[in-house]
Length: 205
Image 1 (cartoon, rainbow, N blue to C red):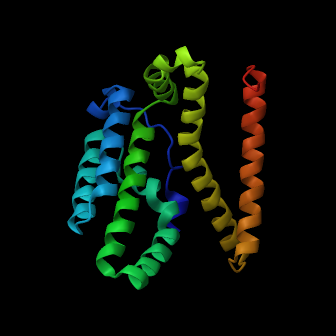
Image 2: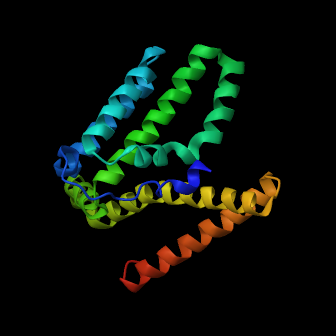
């Protein structure tokens, strides 16, 4: 029910906050550093600190709590299953560190996408990869692929949420076949549409 009132995850939200004005390259570097810290951290306090920092960052961005929740809402069932599995295999402390770190990572990545235009991210990637031009790498093409990859994560999450809502509306029981097949079909249709758009711009070779 809450998912129906939430905006699509990963959708850019215009604004004039400090995070909106921060260069895309700086935000991507900060994201990489924070995600690396989450991976390395083993303390159960690490996710709690990450949640606090993420909440403060969203408040600084001024995008609203609904936008923040929308970034992690599609992850909820996966997080529950992963938490139970990790709790059983590795104990409660490891489970909280793993799942908490995952939720914080998704929320932080979502914050970058909602405060940064795709064109700005593409330009940042292209600038960072420009030295690779000497070995035959096309920085602009690679940057476009990376930007599309980042954008694809919330798109697929949104498609998954739509499939779940369609199941609920029809009163169907959710199982791998009735859920997985429609999700794969919708994802492939989106990929075809994206491919046609790239081909129309001469980027299909």
